[in-house]
Image 1 (cartoon, rainbow, N blue to C red):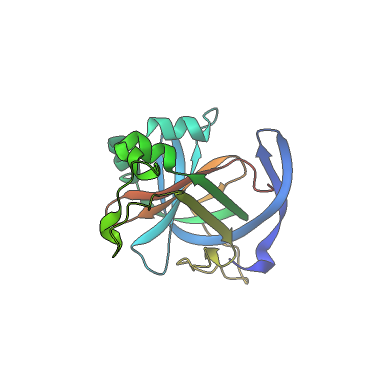
Image 2: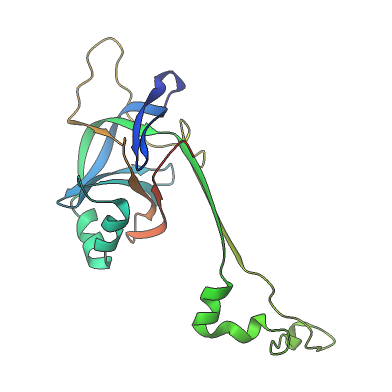
Length: 201
């Protein structure tokens, strides 16, 4: 994306319309679509990875869309991909998430590892002392979408000529809450998934 093509427009958040910076570009993209929503697949320089962004159908929340997507439904959604020239409007955003995984790991049966009286990591120490335990497991994620791409990775694109009217198959505006996913394009596996409710926060 070019900074010259970034300007403020309205994004419809759950709490009302807010002005935020939107990036604009004419891109050749894979478009995926069924009755649950429409999305675009933006490949990275390493085409093993791509960003999938999905606008749920009108009246459906991003969370409800995610709930409809079991592995089979997700694969079927990706299988609808068709290459199109898209006049894209996409908001700039940056989000961070941090959480402790201790509760989740305890539910998976690793509770003893977090208990000083039960943990046994003695084979990890020359003294064979049983004084080690896991005190914290933090999960941190960060994603940024700006003119350089996501996490400063470039996307494959086609520039529109400034000397003629751009020709495109359809215009797609991500101006309301949507789902974004970092996708392994070889396996179709989502490696990271989030929901953007408000790009201004």
